[in-house]
Amino acid sequence: MQTLKTMATVLAPAAMLLAAGCAAVPKTEPAIKAVDAQQLGLSQQRMLAVDQQWWKGFGDPQLDSLIEEAMARNPTLDEAISRVRRAQAQALAAGAGSQPQLSLDGNETRQRLSENYTAPPKSVGFGAGGGGVYWIGELGLNLGWDLDFWGRQASLLQAAKMQAYAAELDRASARLALAGSIAQAYVDLYRAYELADVAADAETQRASLLQLAQSRVRAGLDTNVEVKNAEAMLPQARLARLMAENQRDVAVHRLAALAGHGADWYDKIQRPQLKLDAALPLPDALPMDLLAHRPDVIAAKTRIDAATADRAAAKAAFYPDISLRAFAGFQAVGLDKLLDSNSAAYGAGPAIHLPIFDAHRLEAGYIGATAEIDGAVSQYNDTVLGAVRDVSDALSRGDSLMRQHGESAQSLSAAQAAYDLAKSRYQSGLSSQLTVLNAETQLLGLRANMISINANLVISRVTLLLTLGGSFEPPSDSAAINTDNATSPTSAAAGSGAQS
Image (cartoon, rainbow, N blue to C red; front, side, top):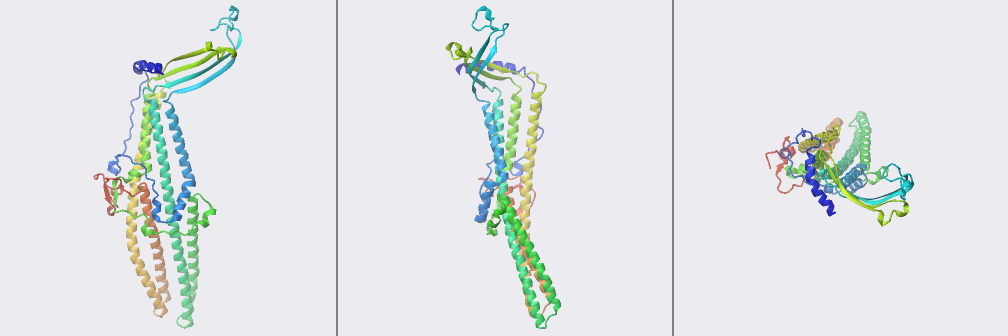
């Protein structure tokens, strides 16, 4: 091994001289510039993707169980895991290129030796001369070591590692998205149960109104017109209940599919026990660089690094490829002499590959690698700007829903009072049946609307948490924004670039 190192030292100056005569590297540079992360609310230093069990904030064991099942069985995650394994295998293969390669090779061939080549004719008197047919064998160890003077193998290894890391981040992003989808579907199931309850209450109220109308007819206070109207309204209420129950069943089917199960799980999914008011409370202020938690943002930046390393490897391919070769073993004519000590053979020496003319193959590879950087930067820019838009939309939606909740609560309170008064007056003969029906219709609509607003508020918080990478927790010493002013486009990215 010391001899090999000595050869490498002697070859280094020669390699520098040879580099001057190799193919010229094209003068091409990346054309697309990455967006300024600081101005968009991202810290320059990338952070590890957050993978917290944030869904436990709902306090519902059934939701925890569904997400755990999905993480273990969902086909989307299985595909992401397979991509991680492929990328890790590629990184392992890239790392092998910079290490010494040792192999044991052997062969035994039945061969006729030429009378006009290296062996003298058999007639001269040699034991194995030309013109004879013999077994010719070789058995030996072969060592090869690419010295990687220009860092090509190191760059390929770095690119492979970055791709493996990006694949792992893609898996984290898939896990985050899957957990978010199940949580949102679970809130939808909660909403479906609540709306089915409203529909059932409406049916009960219509039946009660029918009984009241019949009582008033028997008392001579109403005509059969009111009874027939009440009878017509009852099937409509029953139809609305059946439709609401169907929506509840569809929500169950969706959850089972997300958890990786089929019809065998439909009966296992029970009514959600959610505390919507306490689920995922939004802090008063959000840190500016929470977007740096997002796995897709980190993965996009990592792929720029991988493409840059690939370009460095493509550039190194223009320079001389210097390696060392060595062998030690046995060579013999005749099976009985192959392992004889006199059949021993060995050798060592350098190997140099110098690209001079290759019909633009290296140039095309380098230009293509540069284009890959532009593609990675474009994808990064699109991911970052999309992340800013997602956060902006989520904050604006949450702010709007809070305002809607306040207005709806006032309307619901007034509608409940109006219905109670109308029903009381109808029982006393002071108002008509139509007044009661109108008040009831308004009350039921507002109850359903309030249920949807409450559910949408929770879903909006889940969406905001997903857009911020799975956590509302601020990194240490980070600036923050006030969510009360989050409806402006710039503040949605967790603050403006003026803050630091």
